[in-house]
Length: 177
Image 1 (cartoon, rainbow, N blue to C red):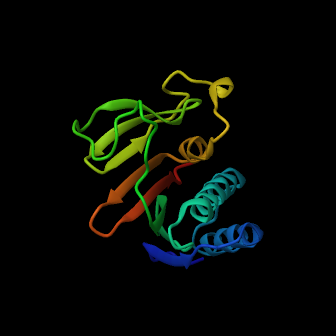
Image 2: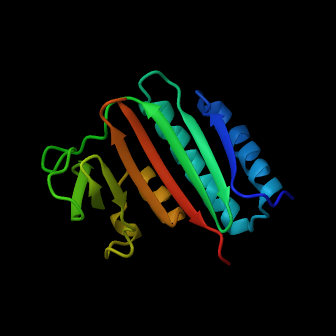
Image 3: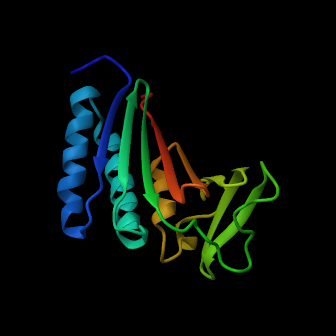
């Protein structure tokens, strides 16, 4: 096991759902070569990767995206970069660019898909854990991929760069046992 941190792995995401299983398996193997992971950590990383890649297959403008993993004791950061349109919420929600910063908002992607977020800047927000915000599993909407990432991670941030038209998803997992 290598101990020189940080370790950076840059990968192209699969473009087919048939490739997701082998992709997540190879990523977990690569991370385990540098940091021994518990079964819970492996499960959390696998859920996050599956949701990020599925999101990319569905929404990437050109069908491609990159995953960058930064293994830095005591954490793992998984970043996904893709070209495309910024996240848009349903018409009843505030939209990007945000006018008020450091504010908690309830947003939705559809009538039955509500999330709690905290604005970080005009083009950046953090998903808030629905359980900590008073929701429970009965309130989970049909399109719950962002909830899965939020709950499997210690931090989940979305950022849009209007100049490059790039979406960035930044997920952090704390390795403290």
